[in-house]
Length: 176
Image (cartoon, rainbow, N blue to C red):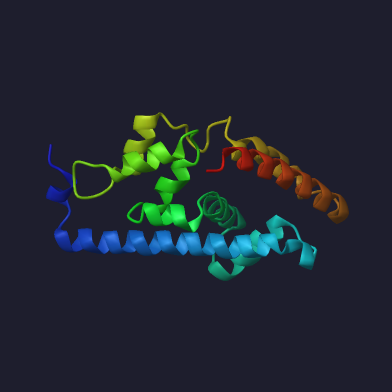
């Protein structure tokens, strides 16, 4: 079977690697911006969800996507990101779903070719559950979110704040 390098022309490889790096940088930057406003939300009297929606409105993404960028950016401080500069944002996202994110990122950095191990290879090697796994945090909270938006505003803010506190406690217990 041919390798990826045998199939994809070198000019396209170079372009794809450049796009990967720019995309990863942009996703982390958007996550950092979202976190900046999430951390200042009490000043404005808004929820995390509001902050994600506000950032998403300017970036052209759904609030859910911004929340994802925010979580990954918050999980990995800049000094950790700098240790793995050639990995994609998806490598980081997948790695944080494990108990040993560092092992996943280290594995991704090793490859028999001139590039990191693929995200699919990392998922397979570490038997990482899909984000749609019913046991994942996002999947667990998703059914609640569709009901929360129907609540009166004052109650919705309280419930969203409680849900955010639960998410923070769980994330903090997994942080590097």
